[in-house]
Amino acid sequence: MSNENIRKVTTHISQNEGLIFEHSSPGKKAYRLAELDVPEIDASAELGAALRTESAALPEVSEPEIIRHFTRLSTWNYAVDHGMYPLGSCTMKYNPRVNEVVSRLDGLAGAHPYQPEQISQGVLRIMKALADQLIEITGMDAITLQPAAGAHGELTGILLMRAFLESQGNARKKILIPDSAHGTNPATAAMAGYEVENLRSNEDGMVDLAALEAQMNEDVAGLMLTNPNTLGIFDEQIAQIAEILHRKGGLLYMDGANMNALVAKARPGDFGVDMMHLNLHKTFSTPHGGGGPGSGPVACTKHLEPFLPKPVVVETDEGTLRLDYDRPQSIGRVRAFYGNFGMLIRALAYIMANGPDGLRQTTEDAVLNANYLRKKLEGTFDLPYSTPTMHEVVFSDKLQSKSGLKTGDIAKRLIDYGFHPYTVSFPMVVHGALMIEPTESEPLEELDLFVDAMKSIAQEAIDSPDLIKNAPHSTRLSRLDETAAARKPVLRWKLESK
Ligand SMILES: *Cc1c(COP(=O)(O)O)cnc(C)c1O
Image (cartoon, rainbow, N blue to C red; front, side):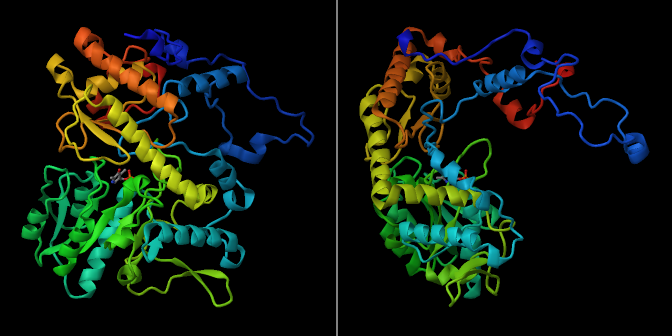
């Protein structure tokens, strides 16, 4: 084991939880108030029964203690600002600081959603500019910026599909979903009231066209295609898939969460897609994690435009912008106000800072980085599909399973080497999947460190499998009960709960 490759996580481990969390002692303060320069009032006379008589029991600590406490807590987590975060499918790329600077400008950070249109022109201009850029990037005709996440965008898109088909007196029952799709796809289709029908992949990891031909009929509203799919494989038959659906009156939804492999190289609108979502918090660098806020705009073709959520930003003849609510066929609102506006600013800043050439370079680097890892780790880890991959690569734990190790064990050990784990056991078409997405953010040096770590772990799997089975060893807590953590989360530390 190459110890020098292990970047120690900063810990400050104490066996005594109380010493970690409880710093309060009476009389300490982290503030100093100015001398009172107004007459003192009799608070009990002014406030009566509303006056607090008991202490609020807030912690009493000094400023350095507060700073140290929160800084220490922040080191117990892992962030994209610490190092490589190769969580496949999630595109954990760097969040440029210029985005933050722009989104904090007074006129933007202080804008209120109830402000009249006349004094919101700048804000509306940003929404319009982003909409135009995303339409250009996707090759679609129209867009809504309202949805607050990718899955929310999917639901919006499928509601558009249904509204469109119903407007033609052609409500249908089923949605086809390839087995390489993201898990949110079938969940979305079911939530929108459709029956989900599974569609087989062929041995190249793409949609089986013969199966599609056989399953496509007048009961099928459409198909949801993640492309590139969760194997990182671009389904190059997408135009044929669209054609098969369209011939029988169905629509093609594209899950665009993996657009980091396509931006400024290929446009879904050019290959027959009817509607799609984007994840601004993946492809367009807005912060991501801790539950949000995200943003999942939905782009669509002309024939679906009348059904988009309202309001829509439109340009008047005088060149000013306004919000158009007069959309009789709209599916209605999917989100309060206009979506997560702060994220829209950041995404626009990212697009403008990069420009078309920068975006193209970004896409090429994302694909190059993933293929560098694929090449370096092939042989050390089993590669279940030999089809070329784009921005991510999926290995399996087949070789390590001979030592009784699973993908989750290898992922835990990776934490000891200073990396966030890759995505574990997903996609489900691969047994024991290791799904790795480095993104374009990683320099060659970091990729090489990752390769060293993975190779070192593969060697440990042969020499000392128990080391991996009990990992991580460098964190404050090691293996948690993941089910209980999800079902019964403890969100607040209390001394008495110990
Ligand atoms: C992340 C992702 C989603 C869901 O997006 P959220 O913003 O997490 O709701 C859907 N499909 C794919 C392929 C994804 O990677």
